[in-house]
Image (cartoon, rainbow, N blue to C red; front, side, top):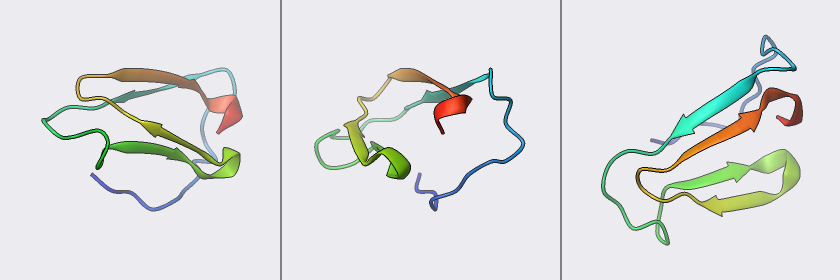
Length: 57
């Protein structure tokens, strides 16, 4: 899945964004989680879940 860079203005500041990676892929070649505002790229492993506070997005 690929999404364009975006911001959801209706998110709760105290809420959490749950992101789950499903499928079979090589995390060194794809499946990266990119946080553009923070210049962070994370190799997101298949089957992984990450919780990100909306307040930092």
